[in-house]
Length: 116
Length: 161
Image (cartoon, rainbow over all chains, first blue to last red; front, side, top):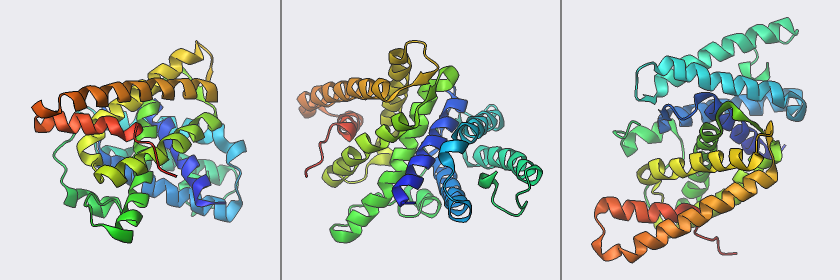
């Protein structure tokens, strides 16, 4: 797995998050930077531990990405843009669901949520 | 959009994202790090433009990175890292790319590589016209006008081999 391949996966997931957000609100750069840093680390960990199954997992992972965007939009509420706080709250929502899914599928609950 | 962010706000959040032009290999390394965050930012904006109307083929997403990363890097080498100044303009164009891709997909459930290629060509033409128009009016540029002019170069500055 090259760094480039991880970058393509992060691009794909952030694009999916953008789909969930739509054009109603802008995203602060700080929120974007926090998401990319967080999920790049998670994806790298997942691929290192479990191998690269992104092709098979892509429909599910990008669906979660779109949900992340929708939750961020929800948490931004009346704010003019999606800020760091809204991004963090959205990630908490999504990762809780991913952890539950990981436990249900027999993966360790201690693993980063992105594995789910 | 929050435009109150200062450079010192950014640095701890995005390691390697440095907007200064220091020169030399440190600068090259800083640009290499920053460009990945910029491509991510644009991908998110493309997704915003597409919305939930269609999915994207993975090779279409990969094309965005392969096509624009070298251009962004070349633009930064020429003008320095002006992303925080130009971001609002460039992400608006990225949303337009998403919108054009949906149009080229013509109601299909998935946006293909060819759709993204055609949409990319459209926005690059738009940016070239935008940059040329601003360059013609350079002598009358306000600071805001200069920002918009240079923003047009983000996707039109061809990398030198």
